[in-house]
Length: 379
Image 1: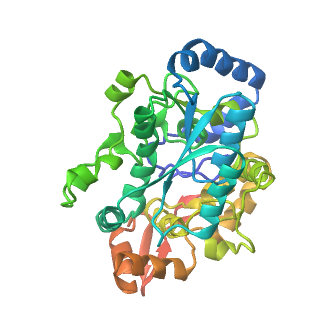
Image 2: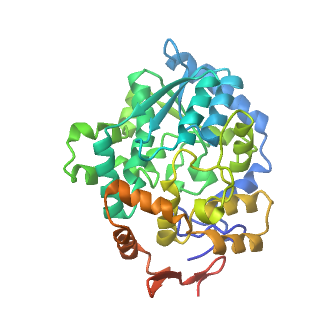
Image 3: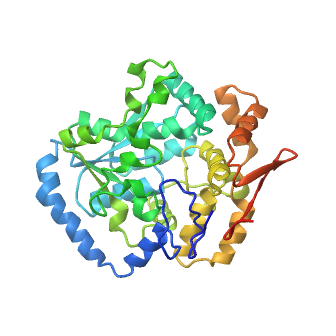
């Protein structure tokens, strides 16, 4: 286990690879951006849209499609595409079932509608959703495996149905996070997002093994690269165009445009340093706990690393925050999750104990403890 010498990104992140000087891909990208002509990037995209994409691919009503949750990133994307690029986007939201989505999430989608956008709100079969979610938890200790596949898949699937060829995604995970498998032919090309750790190349064989009828799983099937070429779909990573793309900036911009965030955020309960992430539901917090036990970092680490890169906190300050809060969430979220998938509370932890990364953690009297020191590695 090695840490980036600039931030606190460990090399345990899936699909990542540090540079020879022990710098993670995200910090390396930040160094590059210091010399970027951002107006030139905007001009490149504008020319590309006019010449090769929108003119050839728009349907009669919409120029592009954007997947949204109603949160900070999708709100800023939608407004920027409409008001800066002067395109007419169709927004698509894959809704969580009633037991999972919270009121804040529904109100944030309503806010997008009130801002003047056309929104498709898609809901999948609740029984299939619940079974796939539960299978993901017990097979991979990742309840979100199936739901993230569905969230990723619904946008290009609806784009195909509506004959919309242009899709806007958020940040480039290869450049701005470090999932190098997603890198495309240039910085804004997102057509290789199918290779992200979440999508695993679009392989959903494990879902077919659950006994769920195949016709119920079509919404979980991400279009293949072959389908993308046939349908002439193009994903553009919009984060590539922003000099000030960050969680804080996206949150501030969106709050000023009606976004509701967590009030009285308590980091040790929400697992959210800033109170503006995953606003539409609360189980992501416990999934970030599971990620922490698998890879040695969770959402707090991701947020702290961004703060370090932006110069808002020092690396030493980041270490203290991560040691105090990473891998934490409110017990009530775990209990509500257990109630939803109909398992006792202790069975949740039994499954987690089986899946912890034993190279990084050990269990002592029922308590999971790290074998590593944040910022240093294995002790």
